Amino acid sequence: MFTAYEGHSRFALALIVTGALMIVLGAIALLWGSDTLVNAMMGASLLLAALGFYKIILGIRARRLSRGWPVPVADGVASIALAALSVTLTATPSP
Image (cartoon, rainbow, N blue to C red):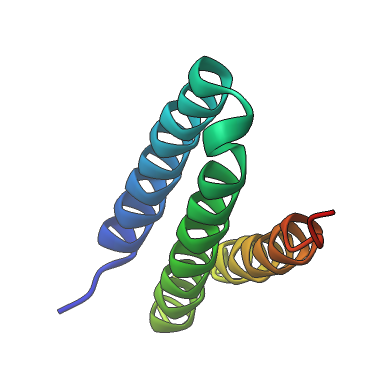
C-alpha cells in the first residue's frame, strides 16, 4: 500500500539525489573545463528528464492520498522542460 508519508519521503529523496548529482556534474565541468562541459550538460539533461518522469509518476500515484500531489507533478514537468532546454542549447553546431 502506498501511503502519503511514503510519497512525500520518496519525493524528498528524489530532490536530495538530484541536488547531489547536479553538484557532482557541476564540479566535473569546472575541473575539466571545455573538454567535458558538453558531456556534463548532456548528463545533467538526462538526469533531469529521468527524475522529471519519476516525479510525475510519484505525484500521480499520490493524488488520492495527498492534497499536495500537484507539487511533484509540476516539479517533474519543470524538470523535463529544463532538460529539453539544456539539450537544445548544448546541441550547437561546432565550427
